[in-house]
Every structure is written in C-alpha cells, then in structure tokens.
Image (cartoon, rainbow, N blue to C red):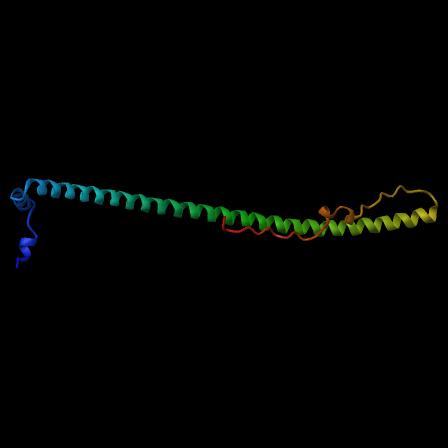
Length: 142
C-alpha cells in the first residue's frame, strides 16, 4: 500500500516517473494530460459563456416586463378615457335628441321647415357604436 503522500507527488516527481516509462506511453500520457487541460479550459469557457448568457437573458426579461407593464398602464388609461368618451357621446346624443324633439315640435306648430339635421342611426355603423371594447388577450407562448 502506498502512503497518502505518495498519491500527492509533486510535478517533478511525476516527470521522473514518466521518464522511467516507455517513451510511447509517456508521450500518450502527456498528450492525454494536455487534452484534459484543454477540455477543462473549454468547459470553463463554456460555463462562463452560459453564465453571461443567463445574465443577459435576465436583463432582457426585466426590460420586457417593464415595457409590458408600461403598455398595460397605457392600455388601462386609454380604456378609461374611451369609457368617459363613450359616456359623453351617449349624453350628447340624448341632448341632441331632446333638442331635435323641441325643434320638431316647433316645426309642427309653426308650419315652417326648421332644417333639422338627421341623427345617424348607430346600428348602420356598428364600428362606431358606443359599446365597451373587449380587451385583446395575447398568449405569452410564441
């Protein structure tokens, strides 16, 4: 049995041991050591690249989340503004209908044409209806 110190020989002791070994075997051992060293270097470089890529992707994710939150806020503000505008449109349409009713009454009682403008029927233009807009929901999976 060898002692624990013999397993932990220094580089020069290993070189002395290699010198005593067959030249072909020594050359193969040196080649294997160099190949293993290069493999460790490549593995470390690959790991470093993956760590950098993870950091970059986390930054990109945070940027996209912030942008998404900003767009969602803009959407909520616009939706709120649209609701207000639709309500105002309905109120103004009711007022116009009331004014037109008074004008028709005056026209009928006076017998003179008043030139009352026709209120457009919203059913003829459904894209302009004062109705709530349904949100467009997209999938996060692309």
